Image (cartoon, rainbow, N blue to C red; front, side):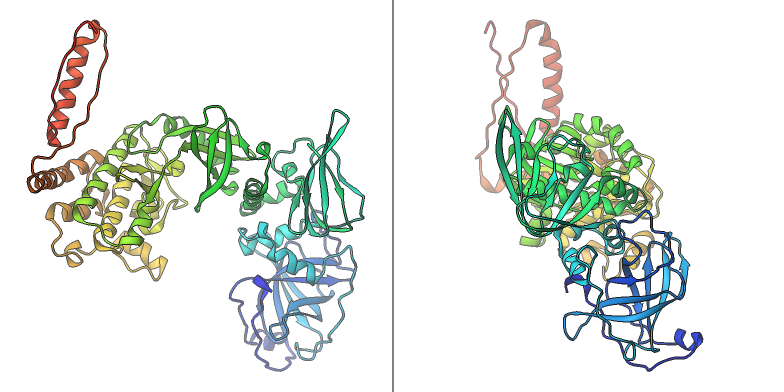
Length: 599
């Protein structure tokens, strides 16, 4: 039954009174359980839902031998007799039993908690009834299909029932027209049984472009864009479909934002399955294959259509991208993020808003994330760790100069090219300094106290996350126990990290002090800028560099650079080279300068 398993109930016998029923032991499902209920003459108003008042999907909150507590999106009349279908653990099938509505109460989510008791006093005595089958009404078998459909997997189970009650079961005969090219896009269909043909009419010619079958979605662009249909769809066989109207979905998504993830799954499926370039085109770019997925979005490899330049394209999940406040803030920062140019920050080339979400076009990288590296090799050598941290500080210093706080520094967002050049990823959560973070965006394992407590954050929040990550890089584990997230957040806010020397006794003091300072709970006691943190690390990297030179002899690398300039730029160029030379000297780099006149 997939996600629809119900816990086995412990027999306790029938109970006669409300007080006794309340004392009945309850079994809480390990995860919320969906059921389907059938009633005659149901006293309720469900005009905003697709099914009539005889069939409704419900969330089962707990069970006892005498009844069930369910949550429904509308009020049910007390005394109504219902048939309640629940999956049976022993047989793997559905058992339908007669019951009645005892009470109902509205909760904080504008849903109705409803108490149902079995007729006869307990489940064992309740009459077993046959489900009143109607091919155009939902059945337990239909619920099993819907719960296993890929498009619903990303939706939180507590929200799924709302979406299911917005679906309308539809039958189509072979040869019937489901969608007509050019008509307004008002709904989509999920195919439960049968197959259909998709074709376009152009210049008096008919071209077949796809055949869709069980589990596929038809007409999804209606919900994503509302644009006119671009193709005809005819039923090839008799079909069973589930219809979702765009208008009904939009009303639900406003009050239940998590349902917007349904759009992300539909869009992802379209990109993954379509062989047509037009279905995978975002602005000037064409998506090819999925290369990553995280909490905030899905990343694809892509190509610029004209320049044939490889890119990475991140599609942000719709639950965030359709939130007006988030979208407003993101637009404000998007231009700044795109203007940042630094060797240690992934370049953002473009940002597209289409299909009711945001696509971020970035440079395509080949290498390994720091998260994967740590999982593969464990703690890093001091020399390598120091070099990576120094580059991260360089990238953060650039971002902070643009008044951008990353807010999600963690190993998964640090990418290493083949030569160990660092690239900071995922500025999608970035914000301006002083912004309150009431949603605790980012990852709690690396979150600073002020972020956890919903206080305004600034650039020093990134340094705290960097310190926690640095601890992990040298010790092979994060500083706090992580068995309980609530306790973990409390430790971030109220407990200093353990001394890194307890984990790595031979850790150089310079690196140990870097970690401890970054991880100060009081932002005022941390490094006050990424530049200050970098300057603290720099002697350690220089010392290592000199040691490496001393042990490997006179062998050195040579990099040449030709600067072609006009005579009027001579003085400005000399000033630039002098500044460059001073910085290079700090790194132990010797510069040889040659001039060629009248080139």
